[in-house]
Image 1 (spheres, rainbow, N blue to C red):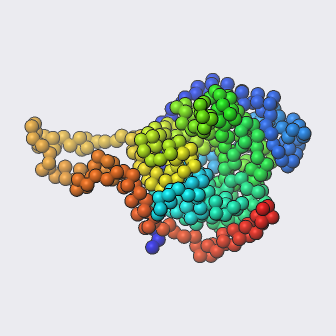
Image 2 (cartoon, helix red, strand yellow):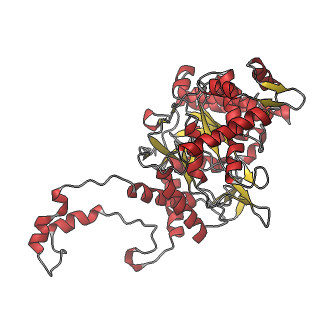
Image 3 (tube, rainbow, N blue to C red):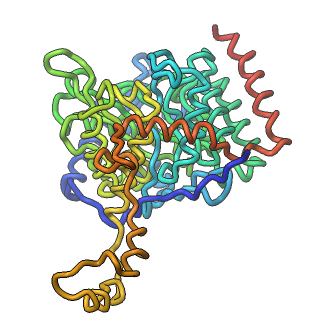
Length: 485
């Protein structure tokens, strides 16, 4: 039975906390421009080197390092749009990235799953991507589906199968592209065109976007940057994401990590604007820390990078993917994961990032517990309610009821009480409130809710005439990928 997908709920970006002053932002931008001009960024691609050279950048053909002067940076980025639309399968799921709303996203790119039936850890598969897309389709606060885990059962074409699983299992916008062999990127675009209905509609309301990560410090991946050029030519929006780690792939200071990551992102944005002026791009820096004793990967630093990176992106006048998020370094669901989810969710409405949230993952975004997405969504909903504007009128004060009851009595017998007590919704995930005095752990209740959605929520499928096309495209891509084995 087909289920109706609920309308999405966005966080309005009315309340924003500014960590950095404009003077500090200008200082960081000056540092980025200095790095781009004097140090440069490595682009291991003859095509990209030719583009830079044709536009007057300083190209060292032996080292593949490109140095870009401030004037060229500013000229190129002047064509990058401040706002654009990420399309859903229906217009009610379209996301306008203009700074007025924050749309919550799932986290992405994990590799391990706690199996829903066996509860044992295993490698992720395409079926996990599809299942999570259906779950997300039913959760109104999540507007943007980033495949939480990878389709490791599909080898080189895993990103294409992840895109397919998203497009066929949710009506919401799908992060459907990433680094692939550039010869495979057109297949992703072709799937997006089928879903959109035409090339023109795909460009106007693209149903997918892409994410391209650099290689810290100050380098890009050949296939990643060439895939990005394919997406840009097709009008597919994409994020360039820098992931500097303080102490190993970035200086061991927040400011060094931020300018290094920013230079990486901006260098790629400049390239896209030189090649395809007006290409829709958004900015993202995810800073982590090398554990000073173990060398391990630490995402929770206690530094408000989430807000600072959004400010940096907006200072370049482009949308940002970043801000408060619920994922954590926790290995299991417990006190630490709950603490991280709560504190991360609380910063979402303060950050002002167009896409943020990163719901549903643990262990540095590598491990998926199915019930975590339900817990994250519940906490984000509480935060959403807490930041709503307060409105009331004289009738809401119930002065007549207070007068009727008078001092020293109670309100249990009042019709007003029987009517309005129902206005309060107590979450079934709370350990403090239980039906029939039967206490159940929140984690158990969340898993039960996950299973309920998994069994009952079935979004509107693609129209029959479109349903077979993605399968044909995937088969062709799988054959193409055999050349690269």
